[in-house]
Structures are given as structure tokens and as C-alpha cells.
Length: 433
Image (cartoon, rainbow, N blue to C red; front, side, top):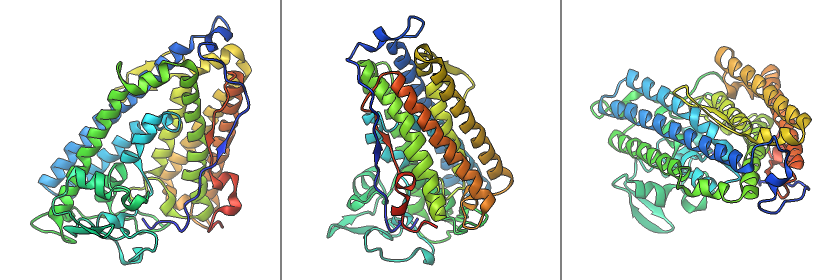
């Protein structure tokens, strides 16, 4: 998608409680509270289960894409698209593990970076534009070009390989919008651009873009190769992160070896996803500028489900319970239990805020299914749709405030929630209506 004129800097919210010494936390809680160690074990167990479910759904997606590429048809394309949507459901819940866990944060850009300048990967409509003053790879179109100029050097792109995608294309030139791998690269290759603006309809890429005998838009062999390779990369990346949360994994160790660090990571993730990321960058920014390019799953019009998954993931972690894709439940002592032991009123307030957010997410999802897609909801002049999105944002902001109170109850300090100019400095947001 076209890169916005200005990418807004992140700002942070700090809290003023006092950090207890390592090992001091469980000694200060009431006897009926679980130990922090038990809470963090649940936290790691839910992470492992969520990433494992994401991996299995990615493998199912890989299988449907293999069928599409072996025997292109409209039906095979529709099946692959549904598999992509299904694959997003467990993954979006795992984003509650971002922002507080460096291992996750360092890895996440490989699988879920957005928004992307899709002209890097494949053909785009004329309205997308040509050269971009801030991104020389804006219309590089690696699928159509077997050689590329990178930093003045000619790069052989005749074979689409994981190394080419990961080391040369992804974030080429240090530009975050040069997204070459992950869910959204696959999404673009399955749907193509959504050229409907804030009108109805998603991307409409034809299955013949992969039909070697009846190729539309050229380079069907290279497009198929790119899609096959990038899907395999997603599977490999999810397998790797799943292992990090296993019994011997580094991510598990990082949150279970020191209870203060672990609880800080947990609550940083919940607050940052609630406030700066979901309420701010993913919802308020797009609403302020009424720009469909700022919706998360913009090619597929699946954004409502992604937002719901994020909110559900926050609830999973706070309550210490996750329903797996096979229907089984992973659960155990939770941070909710810790808060309740110190202040039942605070825990009740956090739970109530989460329940209100989830109820409003139900409203947003139902509207997306029965009335209009999310990109239409944020359109200029759509007062009713705008109000649904704004109410969801307001409830997320209220939820963040309750999480702040929970942090104070637990006597934790130095927890910084990611912020967003759209919430904290709206006057700085270029293009706001």
C-alpha cells in the first residue's frame, strides 16, 4: 500500500509505583494468592499453546496454497484465502506477548510487519504511483524483475529464495514499509490490492495469476515461487517461536527466572497492545485520517477479526485461560488472581473493563459481517460506522487505565505502555479530519 507521508513516533506512558526486589513479590501477597512463579508458568504455557496453534494453522494454509499452485482455480484460491483467515485467528491472540518480551519483539517483524508497500513484491494499479522520494524500492516489483539495484549494486533475483526475501528485500534500505515476508505478504499475494477505498469490496486478484497455462498479469511462475517460498518461511518462523516457549526455550526462561521481570513483561504487553497499538495505531489513526490503508488486514477486509483476536488475547493472559483451536483449554493461576488477592475491587474493575471491550468487539465484528467492512466503518462521513469504532477505542483506553491501577496494586514500577500520537498528540497527526 502507499506509504503515509509521515510515520508517527511512539511515545510511552510511565507509572510511578515502586519495583520490589527480585523474589520479594510473592512474600508480599496474601496467603490465598498464587505464587508469581505459578502465574508466569501459566503465561508461558499459554504462549506456547497459542504459537503452536498458529503453526498448525500455517501448515494448513501452506497445504491449501500448494493445491492452488499445483492446480489453479477459483475454488482453490477461495480455499486458500479462508485458510489464511483461519490462520490469523490464533496468531492475533499471541500479540499480547509483544512489547514486553524482547525475543518476541525482535522476531515479530518477520511475520506480521505492516503496513507494506506492496509494489516491492508484485504489480500494482496505476493509482499506486511510481517512484517514491523516500523509498527507492516502492515499485521494485521483484516478481517481474530478475535483477534489482540495491545500494547501487546489482542483485541477482533470478531465483526467489528465503535468503533473497529475508536478507535483501525485507525492510530493504532500512524502510519498515518494505515488507517482503509474513502474513501480509501472503495476504497480498492471495487477494491483491483492495482498490475500493472506503467502498465495499476487498482485493480481487484472479486465480489465473498463478495459472502457467493461462497466465494473467505476467510472471505467473515467479509469483507462484514467491508465494510458495514466503509461506514456507512463515511456517519455519512459527516453529521457531513455538520452541522458544517450550520447556527449554529462551522466551520461557526470560519470564520465569525472575518474577519481577516476568510480571513486568506480562503487564507491559497487555497495556501496550491495549493502548498504543490497538486503540491507537490500529484503530484511532485510521479513523482520524479516514484512510483504509491504515487498516490492519487491508487486502482481505479481515481487520475486524484481527482486532477481536488482539482483544481476546489480552483477556486470555489476564485471566490465565486460552481456548485452543481444538477446543481444549490451557489455564492456570493468573495475574487476575494476584490482583484480586491484594485488591478485589481493582481486579473486578479490570475484568469489567475487559468484558466491556469484548462486548463492543462483538458489536464491531457483527457490523463487519452484516453491514459494512471495517474500512467502510472508518470512512469520512460515515457517522454511524465511525461511532462504532470510536466507542471501541474509548473502551480500550478505559481498559488501559484499569490495567494501570492493577500495576500500582502489584507494586510494580517502570512499566511503559506504548503510546500513539493519535491518542496522545492528535495535533501532530497529518491529514486528521
